[in-house]
Image 1 (cartoon, helix red, strand yellow):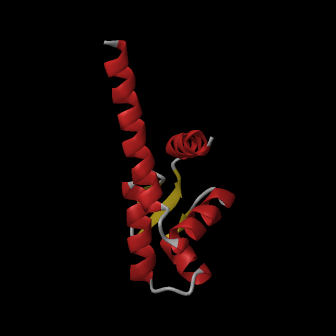
Image 2 (image 1 turned 90 degrees about the horizontal axis):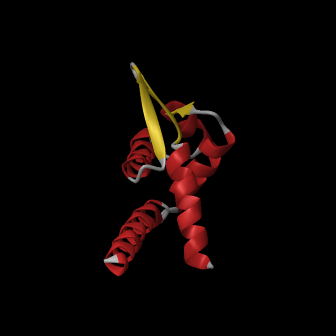
Image 3 (image 1 turned 180 degrees about the vertical axis):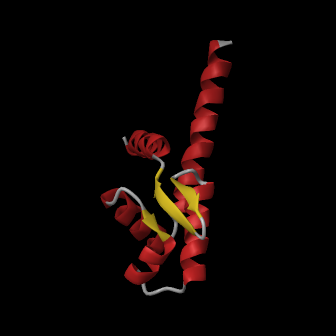
Length: 101
C-alpha cells in the first residue's frame, strides 16, 4: 500500500512538473515571469510597453502562465493585474530542483 501511495505522489509531481515546464516552454513567458518576480504586480499594458509584442500575444502568454498556475490575475475593470502565484512558484522551484538533482 505504501508503494502505491508513493507512486501516486510521484505521478502527481511529474504531472505538475510537466505542466510548469510546458508553460515555461517559450522565452517570452520566461521573461514575463522574471519581470513579475521583480515586481509586486503589473497590468497587461505594462508588459506591452516592456515587450515588443502585440497585446493579444502578451495576453495569450499570460493565459498560459495563469492556466499552469504560475501567475494569478486580479480583475480591476477594465484591466487585469497579474502577479506571481507565490505558492505555486515555490512548488515549481522545488519540483525543478528535485528533478535536476
